[in-house]
Length: 436
Image (cartoon, rainbow, N blue to C red; front, side):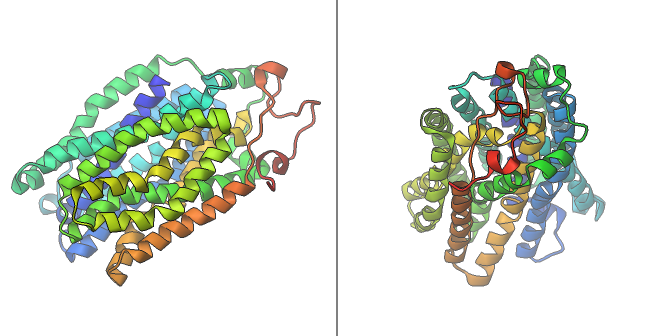
């Protein structure tokens, strides 16, 4: 659990540092020949690029995670992400090397997204597959806080560097958060190198049940589970990235200092760090689906509370608005590590988690900041953005109702990976996607 939490935190720190810089500085440094709003949109498009490459990484790392094991993949993804992030910290700007600057930035962002495609899913699986029944929700709920810990750390570092005089921040201060990740990655790789392999994978391997092509078999045997994964995760991805990335663009246009928004995000992250393990524990007690669905329903409503509080002019209301807006995310994040792995067979589970999360990021988070920025520019109002979030959450709520967990016939109990209690191979529709 600790190794997965550390790795996820580092990966998301690096991911969010890029998103914050894309909102605040990359438009000026790498796309200076455009109108400021257009430059910001182009900068955010490179943020979206990582989501486009995540499915590629999900396919590759899902394949090797199900064939070779979880541990080696997790060490590689952290190394690739850390290397790309450090290189962004020393990348020359447009004024220094011209068009090569945004091209190199795009390549490094591609590597970030590629590595993240296999990172989070592997972290959840290592914990889920090691944990005892009855505690899986709590432990995976703690691991789920990794993205929030990364967000908190990224905003804390961003708060410090944006407190510098603007000339110093634009000159060299923005590079510091990227270079800081080198130390974090070193710690993460050391910890992950000490991990034992997943016991579920070890049993699958010992019984000769490794799939020759896990992603292809997954799509053939469990397509509806994969689709349900993507559509139920998308609204939470939208809400999270609008709160953590788009909020800075929105606040800038309404005269709200970036440092104040950073504080709001950090307060919310602290609440989520406590709330997500609690929701994981509730998922163990009441069932993952029930807790998961409550998060979806909350997100239908909370956008219409967040924006008025955002615009209130009161810092206290600003902070409260962020916390309220992401309450649904606490329920989702706390229960997803128990809910999603239960949808997939053990020998296809890494592929299912990696491709499902990548597809969800593509459908949800990839274009959310750009869509919200475009809606704001077109309508000059927050209402269309709130409707956009609410509709996505409503679709996610409906899909959650029609999805069903199944208690996979335990590997260690009956020595079977894919068969039912009498040895028959259950139909995919019976085990992962049924009418409630």
